[in-house]
Length: 272
Image 1 (cartoon, one colour):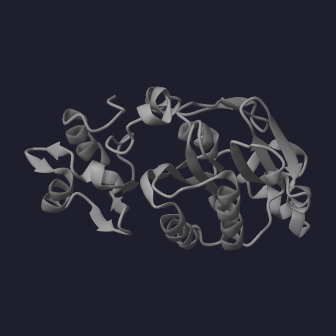
Image 2 (spheres, rainbow, N blue to C red):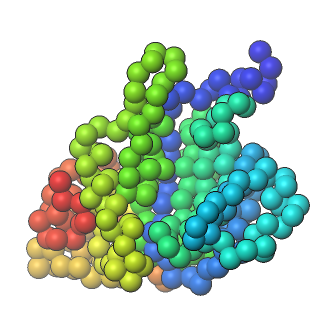
């Protein structure tokens, strides 16, 4: 088996994908700046993408990455989003082992999705990317989580869902029904105008990894600021990463208990 063939055969529908999604940030960022940050993430990942994709308000275009860079496509139009993609299969252009991208205005987000099989040390890689994004973006709100590829992590990031057809056993894959419903609830917020999302004070939900800022930490719960409530009850680990960004790591086994308290306090968008 060739090294190239082995590269693609590592990827299955049940592989776990780690995702990091930033929904709001304090830094000033245009599309060229977003491209520059993506290029630095490529350096962290250690391999060039196969495809670059850009969209404006009406259409999108895909390029071979080498052509995208050579032609300096990012400067040719008023693009609204840019992304880099690594293929899961040499002959399929819609499935990706790594997907990173940024939308700077409408549907604002910076997203990273990495199949664990695509990276030898996923935990170390994510920590390096987090450090980079905290420095460059000054995140106001973001989340980190893992799920099987078949659940559609990119669709989940956008407040939507996807169903996939598995060619091996001829079955359909998709997220569990509760996760599907929770994603659609957030979709209304994600697709709202930037000044109507209120993600500087509200949480989408509680995840294993959460990036918060002062507006979240000042929310009230049990007659305390959220920051003090987390620390006094030892609900995970909260630490400051920058003058703007705080990191809240929550043990997976504690998420349901903690999210119930936050739902009752009106702090989360998802309440199911």
